[in-house]
Image 1 (tube, helix red, strand yellow):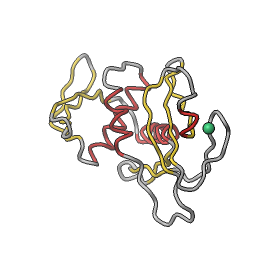
Image 2 (spheres, protein in one colour):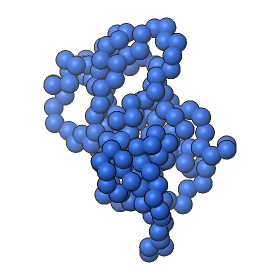
Image 3 (cartoon, helix red, strand yellow):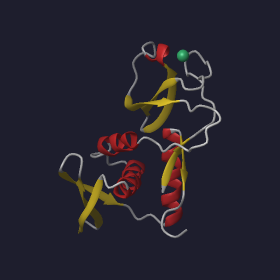
Image 4 (cartoon, helix red, strand yellow):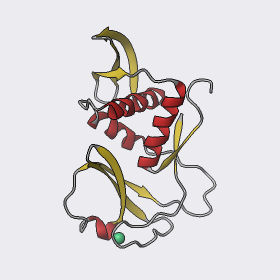
Length: 169
Ligand SMILES: [Zn+2]
């Protein structure tokens, strides 16, 4: 599993200007009625966007055309989301966090130590290498298709296209 920067042209949410080649823009993930909504802003509009319940935000640089090398999504964006979802109990967010943990394990940011069951749930005990601490992840009962669907959903929010597969699919 890997996420690549989506190459489609993006426009600023406020001024509706299409971002130029190599322009740096900001994306914010808003927490609206318990759903995540992504909005992109040019640097000038970032300060004018007003108040909102921003869960996470990051910068992206528009690739130069023609872009021959596919850019990997910034691992820090996923890492930040993973950490911020730590105490969330909403099912879709638990699923998000689990899929993010799979990705971060591949990136060796998290290492699986053990797992345990409590109250009928399975938990992965992961070591966060960056912060040298352990964290637990609820492992939801997802089949491969559901994991791929969540992967796709995260990709859309973060504006990246998931590629490759989970498991041997
Ligand atoms: Zn703008």
